[in-house]
Length: 160
Image 1 (tube, rainbow, N blue to C red):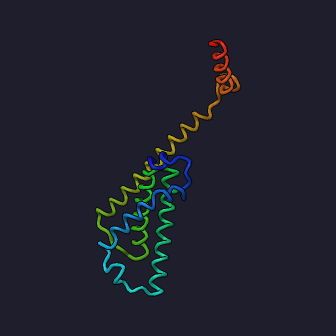
Image 2: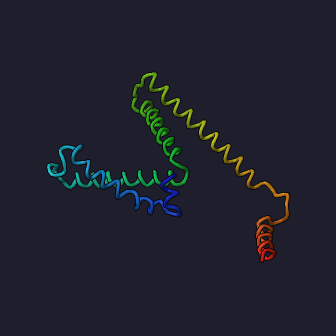
Image 3: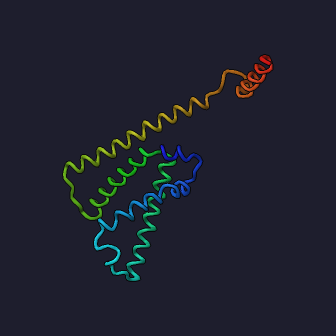
């Protein structure tokens, strides 16, 4: 993605180190306004502190996996995986808990899954086609790269 290209050769953790401080700053400024009862009125017990720590750890792991996905396969695939996750949750809730959904919700989830399958099929086909073109045997000499380098150096000798 755009951020990954800007910070080339950056590991996932290094990218998170660059991006997440800004996200934490924005969240820290907004959270007291939208999250009653606020930090000062909250009753900080050992159990509550442990649960908040576990929640923070889970949030870190979710962000880490999101950065891994975006860094390796792109932002669009990340969004599609999120849609697939939502659809899987809906199906799981239907079978495990007997949740009921309207026809519109079922159609939306089905459309999302169909679009994800279609996107995956097209993407894999394009990558296979590109890979096939890259690995096709060359009709030229045994080493086109060496030939190209040789031609450049001999051109420089002629121009001198």
